[in-house]
Image: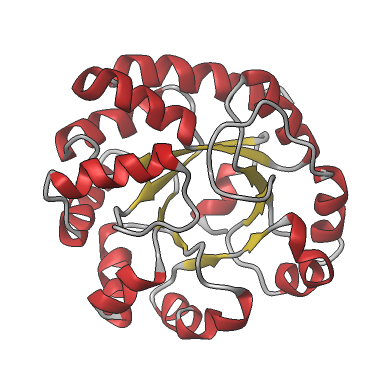
Length: 258
């Protein structure tokens, strides 16, 4: 069983997203540990990129802060390796095709695997173009995680059939960011995914309160939260570990109880 599947084994999963290098690498290290201590079941590490098209202003600003601080892809690999010494829950990278291409796709996959990463999410790579990445990800034992959006409709079954790791279900149209309410019929999307695959599916984009986390986890296998955590980093900077741990605990407890 892959490490990613273990995250969903005993209860609904809570997945925390953290941009690496925001505001600096030392803070990222502390915040990742804080999220794990708070009960996160899987960590998404964002590799900063200058043009993150799927992100709203909150994560975009985090990318800018990380890049302004000089964070490189090699820094991300080094930090991941260090985190992996003491963290045994799954970790995946979230970044963009350009980051992987410009680094060298095979070299990137090899370094990611060496660092102890379990999978990769590339929001700007549609299902039809995944062949540019999937064979090399597989070669190095990484799951290329598929995203399914409310607009995927008749493609949902097709994407789910070939999905690996977990299915990332996008709750709302548009970019990442907190939402007052989520109106997409997540239950119907989950049903379609489940009819075509036995791998877990988790919901992301727009979740910020324990109530939303519990509701989305109840309709799927887990909840993914990014912008709400990044807002705490923007607010507390190098002192964000404490507030992040507290927030993640409230969200993880809610998801786990679903």
